[in-house]
Length: 178
Figure 1 (tube, rainbow, N blue to C red):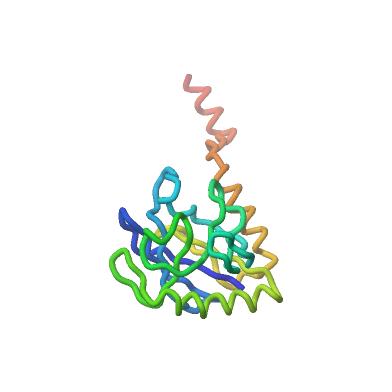
Figure 2 (figure 1 turned 90 degrees about the horizontal axis):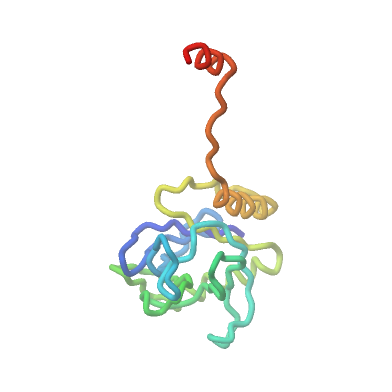
């Protein structure tokens, strides 16, 4: 199962997005504000691809989806909630949206959780969070590509642009003019 969050409305308080399940719109999302530097408890997680598992949450005292290997974040969950006050880096879901608000959150979460829970028994589940302006990868990518996509995401953050090598002809011309 592939989940994709398209971040649409970025404000100083929150980030509203659309969650798609295998290419179909499912619900709206609300996260903390996107910031260039992480501030604990008030910053959205980095855009990227993450594996999702369901396990028991000590905080919520029930099974919830957990995003794995989120850089500089621990315990990132998908759960019900309405505003940025209801999240500390987690992804909230809802059926309706307003300014810095999503509504009918419990209903949206119930439907989404059932889909994730069912899929997790037969396949790996991945979620991709996309910033406005990011290149959108095709949703048709296979489950096996998930680990490759995560590896690409990790290496892209470490990649440094290298200057292009001059051709032999250009080097000779530059040396001749010197």
